[in-house]
Every structure is written in C-alpha cells, then in structure tokens.
Image (cartoon, rainbow, N blue to C red; front, side, top):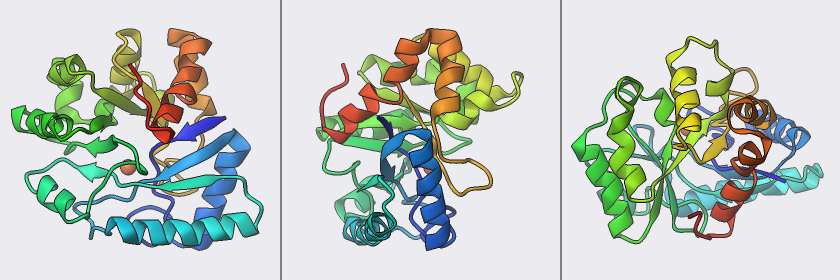
Length: 239
Ligand SMILES: [Fe+2]
C-alpha cells in the first residue's frame, strides 16, 4: 500500500481543496491509485496557520466523511512547515508541527531563496530531535541552479521529497531535470503528490513511481512510495 506524505486535502484551509466535495474526490482518486495513508499538510505560512489541534479537528471531520462514504483512506494530521526566520516561534506556539506524532517534519523552503540561513533552520530541527524532510527541492529555483546547496543537509542524514508531478513534466523543464538528477545520484527518498485539487497537481503516485522506475528500477521506486513513507507513519528511522 502506498503512503502520500504531502497533500492539501483539507477543505477551505489554504490553496488546496475548495470544499468537502473536492476533498472527498481527491481521496477517491488517491484510493483508486493505491494510496492508503495520506498526511494532510496545510501550509503553515504565509497562509493563516492552523494550530495543530485545529488541523487534527479538521482531519477528524474529513475522516468521518470518508468513513461514511466507505473510502478506505486514513488521513493523518501534519503541516507543511515553511522555513523562514519565524518558524520556531510558530513551532513553539503549535502553529506548525511534525507529521502525525512522528519525529518527521515536512519542511518547505522559499521557492526563490535557499542559503546558509535556510540550512541552519533545517539543522535546528535536527538539534531539537526531529527528522526534517525537505519538500520538493527540485522546484526551488536556487537548488535547480546549484544542487550542492542541499549537500550539507543530505550529509546530516536529511531526507528529500520529490513532487510526483515533477517527473511528469516535459523532459526539458528544470524541475524534472533536477528530480531525475537527484534520483540518479541517490539524493531523493520519497515521492509525494502535494495534491491541491482534482484539476492540477492531482492525487496519485503510480505514474510518478513508474517514471522513477525507468531511472532507478522498480524496486527502489516502489520504496519511495511505500517502505520509506511508511516509516514516517510508524515513526521509524529510514537510514
Ligand atoms: Fe505543499
């Protein structure tokens, strides 16, 4: 069974699902694709952040609707934690938190900015006993220009999450090019949908797994959508 660690399925929270009907449609597509666990990871910033307790309440409401409709998807509360100077202030107020009750943190850099200060924030999570997962590095412009920027993070045992859709772009698009390089170099660990709705950035991981399999083989590609993200569900170390 597949696990999707990154989604914006919670209705009316951020730029994700617009209402409960769309959230349910996203869940149906995920289940049809073979996904059984999905983390709900609403943006924590610059959107108005939900408290961890509020995310949990909304997940419970969505889970009730899914259970009623007999859709076999388990939703786990989380946040997509934006890396900026105020992140630990927000964290300490529970306006950002880990994936479920685990030590894993889905950490998203600014799209146009990644420097020493960003890496220091990632290191601070590790110092606090958490295991940061870098969200979609292949979509971050400075990382596209210089992959070496994430080497210190990887050297500390950092985990990266590629967005499934990046592998399905046209071959010359920067995000796909970088995602493929990361796969070849062993710099990528998890594929996730980052699903926002049912019209673009769709739920589902199978097509991306198959695209990854052409580069790293089916066994390793399958690990990126099953074994490794399941370790996040179970709060187990990947390495
Ligand atoms: Fe996201």
